[in-house]
Length: 343
Image (cartoon, rainbow, N blue to C red; front, side, top):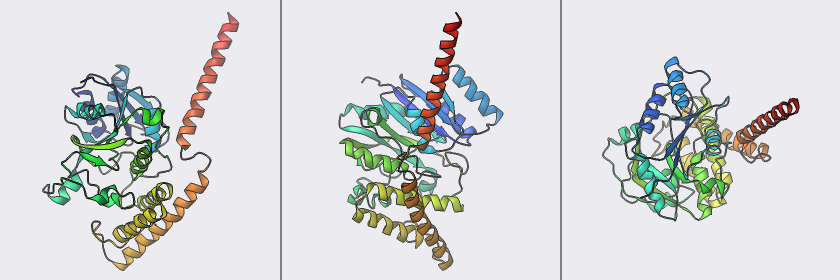
């Protein structure tokens, strides 16, 4: 099998030792053709992390980009514009990889109908909740329904390869032409933890005619660190709750038919507000009212987001990057012209 160049993209925010360990695992991969792009949104690193990143960048082992904003979908887009690989692969900054990880992703692209690969995620928290005993062969039909798939697609416990509707953002890859030929980009309006940003992208990807293929052998361990990552927002915080509902409503407003959207919003209310399974939240009337308030605010906030962002179509950070790039090119051109005229 040939080895297409893989661009491994790692957005990072506020991570230190987990990021260093993730990079070690990537650079020790048994795969001959890769480039590693780190989009670093951390304002200040610990000395050891800073030294490691500087050394890896200076030796050409990674491309290290530092930006002064924090957005997971924005960081993904930023790196894709600078990547050259035939396969674009995204991982989180707190994962552990087996040696054959990249090889396993790459082999799936021998099939021309596959445009994206969703890998299995050994998620420490979800595996602990199930006692490591649950295994799934075939996902239920509901896992392919855009309205309710998000409550049935399980890429933690599923052990059989199959077609899926979406991937997990910490372990997913795409053909480069999804971006270059079909013009798909991650929507930078997904806020906070950016929950559902990959779901939004995958729903739009299906319109290209490509399949998303789940390969459980393309697995990794997601450590799920409590702090850092792309957002550094506690799941118990008010900000997390607001952006969580905002992002679900945004997903529905952008991609779903009215009936699909109603099913999504109904299930969202039943599970996350009322606390019914599989969410199993507290049934306290006070907490239900509180969650209901965030649900309502999230809906209104998503409407405001769509109204205010009609001009940039969800590419705010991309536009900032392009403006900065154009400014640098213009400044370089002026310097070159001035040097030529002086000689």
